Image (cartoon, rainbow, N blue to C red; front, side, top):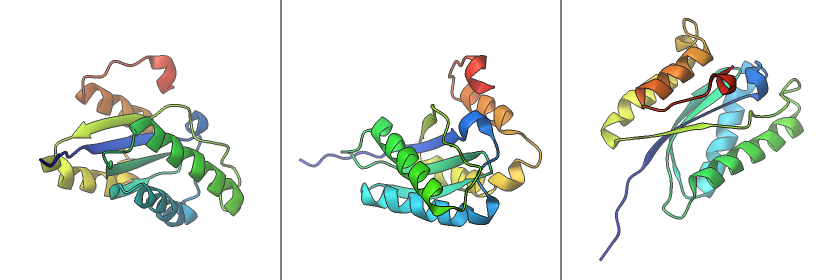
Length: 148
């Protein structure tokens, strides 16, 4: 008998102290690099985008991949790559935590659209408000000291 599963993760993580240290000029290069990391883990990337202080990733994890290891690898490898590239001179590091939410595959198209429109979305809503809204919509309690 075969095993079947489908786990759609919406992952969000931000820069250290949410400082705007991800140069807009090099977002596409960063996203391509992260896409390569995801592909190497046999995972599927549906969408990636963000702003100068955070990134959203919509992906499906291969059954052999542990979520915390997956995110740690993406953050650690991209951190090293960003510093070595010279294209992100004010980037210090990623913040310690992350948000990972699961969704039904039926919600994929709306999530892809939402992530694609991050830069436009953040013209009217800051990251902290977006983050708290995501947590509330998913019934997650949070501690204010880790948001600000």
